Image (cartoon, rainbow, N blue to C red; front, side, top):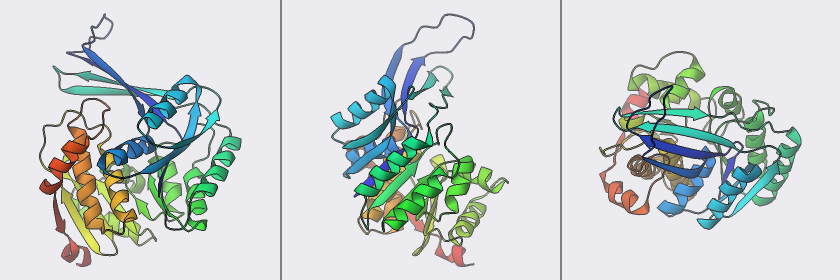
Length: 315
């Protein structure tokens, strides 16, 4: 079983217009509303590409109800802990005439650690040896940066596998607990190590350094340039097919969905990169915060190029 945990879910709102004029009235040509948050996105993409998951996390107020209800309508079972306040909103402004989008992301409601204890209890009841648990996204205010590290240890005590996709201090602290898979993008990896990564060789070397800290799989996403992954089988680069990108929002989460689907079924890292790259490209075809569709995923899957970097990895 695959379980996704979203501590700080969101309702993603997208408004589309030709050009944003600050200080003036703007006419919106289109808009949409979707449940969001990294773990939520992973569950939704898994449902499209042939996987199943159980979605967990926190839900506050009417917007939290919207997140839960939408997932259930998509056939995804959920267990969200009710918390005070209101689930955050993320606003994306898409300017079609400027080929530009601007994101305004709320921090999320302050969450008392007592609710984290309840979530930990529910998670420990539901996971079994061999399961994969995706811990993704930001940590809400009032919870410590060590939250993911503690959850990773809980997952490991149950004999399950932990996947971490976060940023900043939650990522830095989480790595200390040795998740089985970590998936930063290039910018997150640069923040983690405190220096720029100007070449693919540097990305690969840094991924290998992380693996030497006890992390079985390290995958670094690089947008249109694809992804580099290292694991027990060696090092790989996946290049997605060239598509006319409409929106890159959620493509990294789609990569995680493909990776976890393959690995949870006993497939190789190379196969996970292939599935994840196709899912990411399929999401890039969708407007705003819409995610991959099954038909696009299947069409793009044979077009992904996965090449071994084993010689470079051992050089």
